[in-house]
Length: 314
Image 1 (cartoon, rainbow, N blue to C red):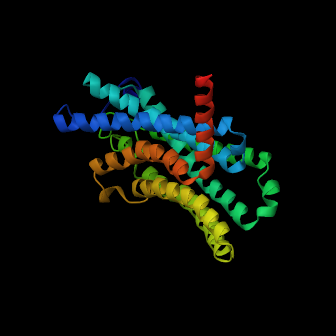
Image 2: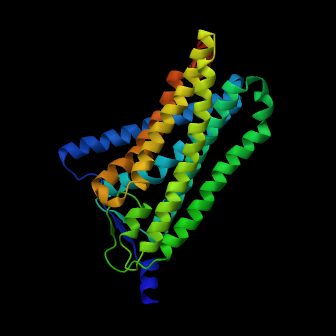
């Protein structure tokens, strides 16, 4: 009972990414600039999808949910990391640690599920264009989004509650810049071997099931594209699908390294860098990838800027 009480009442200490040296100050400034750029990019994309009626389609509705998740991802980790750096200490309460872990897992699992469902949207658009309005009607889109969010809530609730049930009675220094599940388990003074095995198996399933759907969808899409006689239609299909494939590669590349490669094959420093990549770099790149590759988004931005310029002249 004493061990459990200590695990609930004591704070954890997070090991930050940067020290207060010249090169690290530059890196910290770079992270802060990337964070601001990511929030701005995703906010603009959300605004464009909301305001431009031509973007009121199933693909952009799903993309708006991706942008919403990409706003939340860095907000959970980067402000706390920045505050710790500026204050010179990395203390985080048990409740704060639990909240970080829960919301990161919620958004990570939800984004993985959403990306797989977005591949199904591309499959229907390319392989069954005449049935697209029926197969991707609004109720279906809402069901897809609800499924992705619900899967995130379910996995996050189960894994957070189990992880925090273990006693933490030894070192309370988390070798990470936020409370990530694998890093926290290393501090437990109980035997977590069975849970870590179950976690690895569930992690493989959580990653492989969406990846299987993505691979199946795009194998069908590739076959359909290669059978197209129109060069313009083929180019349009490749353009819309390549944006999604790029985002999938960025997200799942980091996730596979973190949760499918055994911990003995990567160091805490590598974990920190990969975590920074999927919690900050990927959410920042996603809106840029879609805005640079999608003509509809570019046109929506030009129209909004044009209207703003016209109003200012008046």
